[in-house]
Amino acid sequence: MKVVIVYLHGKRIGEKLFNYMFLYIRMDPIVILKRVHKTFLLGRRAVPALRGVNLDVERGEFLAIMGPSGCGKTTLLNLVGMLDKPTEGRVVVKGRDATSMSDDLASDLRLREVGFVFQNFNLIPNMTVLENVQLPMRFAYMNRIRMESRARMLLNAVGLEDRMEHLPSELSGGEQQRVSIARALANDPSILILDEPTGELDSEMGHEIISLLKRLNKKSKKTMIMASHDPSIASYADRVVRMLDGKVVG
Ligand SMILES: Nc1ncnc2c1ncn2[C@@H]1O[C@H](COP(=O)(O)OP(=O)(O)O)[C@@H](O)[C@H]1O
Ligand SMILES: [Mg+2]
Image 1 (cartoon, rainbow, N blue to C red):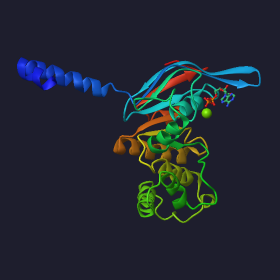
Image 2: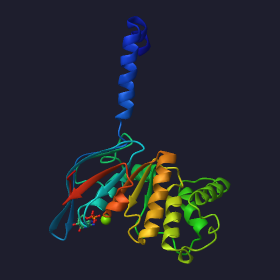
Image 3: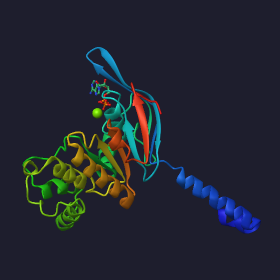
């Protein structure tokens, strides 16, 4: 139908159509939060963690969310990562409404589309570095040979080619965080969620990790959403959104 219109009306309409389609593709956010509220119940007390958050994240964007402890950053990341559901409002991830989907679908999407990096690395202590990175692929039923070669490739990419057989406890904090970044990339997700990824590291290691993340973002075009309360870390992102008391304030 579109082709017929272009043919009948000539070049100008064709151009307009192209521009319109281009605009549409560019303005198709990978994550949309609309009037999102999240209230936790602590006994009988309601704790409002998010209070009407609106936020769009573009494909390939490296977004930092800054704000003081307790302002709702982790709660927001958990909603985007489909670990939790909002009390009110809508969360849309890659065109799917995460608010209404079943828990099974949410865990499947989470496994394939989202990689998590946490402040405290969350590595399995009795598994080697190589096994830790393979774990998400095992959950996704990838075959063993592919799984191992992909884990080796990812560990190479984060500069840990000579640490593969070590246990996490034998590595420095910065190295452990590199392992967790490789693990987050295991199933080639389109979104990486980074919750204070440099929070446990000294300043030098923190800057090494954030530079690595920045390089990965530019090279792989993966969308990255990072919480941080450190302005010098957040400044590596393409865009910084500030939160206060459960709201986006700028
Ligand atoms: N599971 C929970 N139960 C009760 N209150 C919670 C829970 N998770 C977070 N909160 C509260 O929600 C608010 C936001 O927390 P959080 O999202 O962890 O903030 P941040 O990551 O910015 O430090 C805080 O007041 C916190 O105490
Ligand atoms: Mg937090």
